[in-house]
Amino acid sequence: MGPVAVHQQQGHSVSLLWPEGVAAPLALLAFGDAIKAGARADLDALRARGLQLRMLSGDSPVTAQAVAAQLGFAPQEVQAGMLPGDKAQAVRDWHAQGHVVAFVGDGINDAPALVAADLGMAMAQADTGTDVAMHAAGLTLMRGELRLVGQALDVCRLTVQKIRQNLFWAFVFNAAGIPLAASGWLTPVLAGMAMSMSSLSVMLNALLLRRHRAPH
Image (cartoon, rainbow, N blue to C red):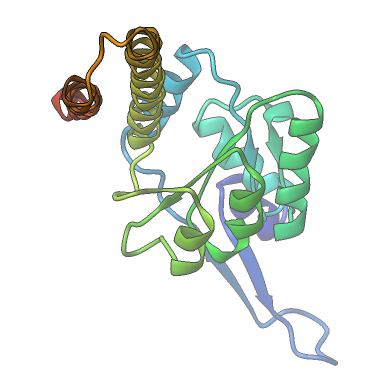
C-alpha cells in the first residue's frame, strides 16, 4: 500500500507536488481535520430521533469513508467526490422521493444545497463558517457544534406548535364575535376590547417560547 492510500485511509486529503517532466513527485502533503469530541454522540442522538443521516463530501471516497466510519455512518450513507451542484442535486433527489430534507453546511461549496433544502442550517463558527453559507441558509447555528442541530429542530417544532395554537384561538375569538356582532350584542367598545384580548393572548402564548431552555 502506497503512502497516498495510507493517508487517505486515515481520513486525510492528499496533494502531490509533481512538476511537469519529473518522473516522481517531489513531496506529499496530507491535510486533515480532527473530529470534534462528542460529534459521534451528537450524531447518534439525531439518529435516535428517527432521522436518516447522510454525509455528502467533496473529498475522495477513501478519505470520506474513513472519516464517516468514525462518525457511525454506513458505507451506503456516504457520497464522496461531490461538487457543489452535486450536493444540491442530491437534496433535490431526496425531495423527489418524498423526503423532507434538512442540510447542515459551513462552506461556500454547501451554499447550493443549503438553498435547495427544506431547512438549511449554516454554522457560524469563526474558523469554519462563511458569510455565503449563512446568507444561503434559513437558519444559522451560532457555534460549530452538531448538538445544536437537535436543539434547533426542537425550537422549530415548538414554534410551529405556537403558530397553530395562535391560529386556533384567533379563529375561536372570531367565530364567537361574528354572531354576537350580527345579533347586535357586541358593541364597538366590546369588539375593540375583544380584539385587544385576542392580540394579547396570541402575544403571551408566543412569549412562552422564551421558557424553552436547551440542555447544555
